[in-house]
Structure formats: structure tokens, C-alpha cells
Image 1 (cartoon, one colour):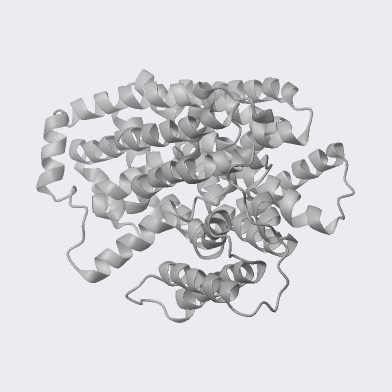
Image 2: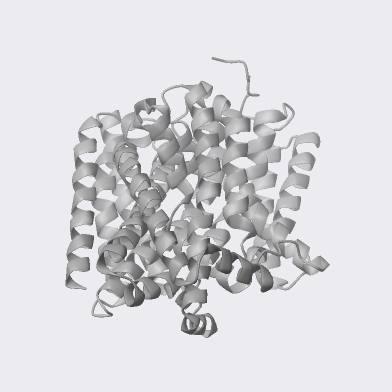
Length: 483
């Protein structure tokens, strides 16, 4: 165990070193937020892949499959992969040609300052769950490796400090370089672990046959409530994550628009294929050690996320433990860094700056985004330490905010010339309000609350844009052919 802890500490130090070295490329806010729009295809693919391949993929989605089968994970990897492909096909060229720093800049140009602030605030709030999931995972790894000597909340704090150090200095440049290293470690490490665990379980064919016999591959529900629940989870990821800043900044950090489209599609497809590796590992782990099933019965939902760490620590040689935890840390760090930078960028550029009269210099804005990054990290820490949800549940809940409040104004603004500021305000405010009302006041409805919020957002966009304009239109239609 001591040797494994030394490796983990060394790996974290190497990651910090690489991130700080990359920070030397940061001279402007544009460098910090989108790496100066200069990433080649291979780096862009790595950063897009890392958008999704995080803690919830390795620990939570995989364990949820082992418990519930494919029917329990429609959001990730299925919805998550669809999100990246749709974002590439519908928005990559548009965003790149508009020369935007943040997703909030789109709402500002299309609808004006009021919609910019409201939608950007919704996106920032949604990141609390997403970021907290990654910090929780870092803490879980440190807690498990210490044999429980480091309390989970203290471990979460240590993990957050590591990510914060290199992200606050290097921004997207640090993320890009560390993502490249971490993607390589993820693919090699998890591939080797999958082979080892599969062998422990009696071979891949036995694992797949048992999963099939137990109905784990049954994706489609047998009743109407099941279909609605699956649709709610799928659309939360597939549509709700498109207006996210980390998807935007990784996509538009490419060196040109062609690279942005190709890199995002390739990254999304690679993610979809490789996401099934930890899924295979988790189910093979249950086949190899039936005692792990006991974790599914815990009152604390987070306990199912210990399936893989417990198996690796108790059943595998040191070198295999090194490979697994190296891959796991890589997955968490690559996603966590982007999850911290994204809301900090958005809050600075589109929530605070509109009220400062545009009087900030680039240096002042760069300082402000770093201060906000530290502040947001503290908020995410509080959320992570007090949540009892699994990481998969945290992420899905996060995307419900943007599904109900930001997706429709984005699509309508890009592809419907008659969309107005009033329509966007109705859509964003009304969609979120109705979703929250249904979620907490009328729980247990057949149609999930997030889908009701989405339908309301769509209807209110039509009513607000086509009805009498009581609110002056402040934006301008988007010209798709603009260079």
C-alpha cells in the first residue's frame, strides 16, 4: 500500500508540474479560456474525450450498469456521446466563426445582456453538481488508498487543491497538455485492467454470457413509466449538456473550424466506444467476487462506486493497482480541471462583466477569472461534502438546469430568425421555474420533471417570440455564412 501511495503522490506532482509548465503559454484571457484557439487535431480529440471520461464513467456509470444493466445508464454514455456529435454538427462551425470566448457570448450577441446573464447564471449553477462529482471521486480515491486514515471530506479537500493549483495558473493550456497525458494513461491502464479482471472472472465470454443471462443488456423498458424515465435521463445528457461551457471551450480551442468539427466528433465516438471498458470491468469484478454485490444494498448510494477500487486493492498485484489508479486519477483530473475552469470563465465574462461597464483591462479580467475559479472551487467543495448522491446522479441533476433553461434559447437563437429577447427570457426563466415546481411540488409524475421543463421552455419560446413584444428585442439574428 505504501508503494501505491507513493506512486499516486508522484503522479499528482507530475500532473501539477506539466500544468504549471503549460501555464507559461498564458498571456491573455483568450489563452486562458480557449488555449488561444491553437490546438491541433490530436490534442483537440484528447480534450473532447476528457470532457466526459471522468469519475462518473469509471466508478459510477460502470457500477450502475453492474447493478441495473443498460436500462440504468441511458444518459451516459449514450446521451453524452450524442451530445458531442450534435454539438459538432450543429454548433462547432457557428461558434468558431463567431469568435466567441464563452457560450454566454452567444446569448449576448443573439439576445442581449439580460438573456446573457440569466442563461449564463443557469449554466454556472449547473456546474456545482458536475464539479462536485469529480471532487468527490478524487476524495474517494485518496480515502480508499489511505485505508480510511484520511477522512473522506478531508480527502476531497486535498484532491480539490491539486486540481486547483494547475488550473488556476494555466487555464485551458494546462488542461490541454494534462489531458493529452491523461488520455494515454486512461486507455493503456484501463485496457490492461480489463484484461486482468476479465481473466479473474473466467474470461470475457463468460462475463458477457452471464450479463446477458441476467438481462443486463436489456436497454428498452417494458412499460410507459420506464420509457419516460429513460427519455428524461437521455435528454438531460444529450440536450442539456450542449449549452455547457466546457463542451464549448474544448470544441473551440481547436486551431480551425474543420479541426473543431472533426475533433469533437472523433472525441465523442472514441468516448462512446471506450466507456464500455470500465463497464465491462465493473461487471467482471462482480462476477469474480460476489461479495461486492453487498455494496449495492448500502443506504449510502455512493458505496456502489467502491466496486472497482475495492476489487483492485484486494485482488490485484501492485503493478495492476498502479495501472488502475493511474488511469482513474487521469480520468478524474482531466474532467475536474475543465469543470472548474468552465463556470469560472462564464461567471467572469457573462455574469459579472456586464455589470462592470466593460472597464476591465485584459490583465484585470485574467485576475478576476482566477479569483472566481478559487471561489467556485470552494462552493463545489461544500456541495461535494454534503451530498449523498452518486456521481452519475449528481451529473444528471446538473444537466437538468441547462436542459430546461438554456438549450431551447440556444437552438432557437442559432436556427430560428424570429426568436426574440422576450421569447428567450420566457423560455429560460419559465423552463427552469416549471421544472423546479414539478420536481419539488409534484414529484412522481409519469413525465419526468426535466422533460416538462423542456417542453415548457419550447412552448414559452414560441409564445414569447410570436406574441406582442412587451420587452424590446436586444439582439441580432445569426448569419451562418459569416466568416
